[in-house]
Image (cartoon, rainbow, N blue to C red; front, side):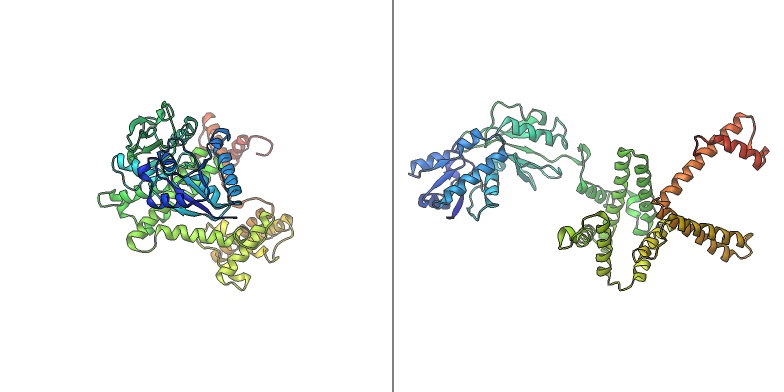
Length: 477
């Protein structure tokens, strides 16, 4: 295949053509323009004797932009099979047909004046502007001003508006640049809801959305949270937030994790999102404190977890192969041992964090022992061990030796966790639900006692038991 050179013509007017672009086009054997519509530079090329073809017919016949990109690349490749080609677009750095072409062939790009240059010169001054094209728009944050280029049709602008309304208010001011008339650019201030209601559109149209004040945002992203925390812990921030340390926040991280788990159990997904926000706040809070004292950075947190996920998923990012979720778990443990240099399974057991809730830690330790075959065949065998441990607890009662009794009770609980795990039951969740059921039954029992005109103080345990049995509902209660 012959060489393909991509030329940036500039925003349209001939005065934005660079000398390098003109000289390259003069020497070219074959020139193809993406379009000559609203392109004064194309008229100038005709005047200086440069002949060219255009892809304007594709703009008319393609059903959508994806088809246009594909067919444009195919036509350029066919042309390059016969002779060297110069493909001229307004801005090679922003043109998506060029991006599609570069996935299929090596190209040389002659840079030029970007599409954004006259727009930014005409608009009020902005800092840290993010620039995207309308066809490739992906709004993920609104910390910075957003310039959207090539708003060339009402339908495309309407699609952009729908995406923008997820982040911005319908009355959000937008600086809209209508079709260009000569070299000078002007803008009109519109409401976002009116962005797709203008009389005309072409590839020279653009929209600039200024940044929105933090207190006026409709939605927020991760870096907004980072900024909020920086303000709260800044010089004029919140006295309580500024006093916190890694150690003082430890209990809140644990509490928020448990509250999130409870919300998931409820199945209230708005509540889950709210609680996960509280968990994320704790992460950002800790990162801000760490940055202040130089212990670590937020990027250390994201780097460590991304590095870990890539390393532990070698079946995705490396050469390992896993067909099932069980294969993935086994491979995870294998990679983890390699990372930590473990040579025995005992090291893996000791590595289970002592900071976990005891029941959770017990289940994890048992699972790691089971990885090497140290496991009861099924839950029934483990349940027999529960009965054995219960008898040993009974033998220690009334508890002359507190240490022995505590040890036997611990063995009983450990055995219960083992039986639950082998039965496919999460012991932590099961105990939580049992506690909730007890509270519900106790409340029902107390209500029944009060309705009978009695109180706990006047009842024996046997009498209370009558009301307790009456509080049970359903065959399994």
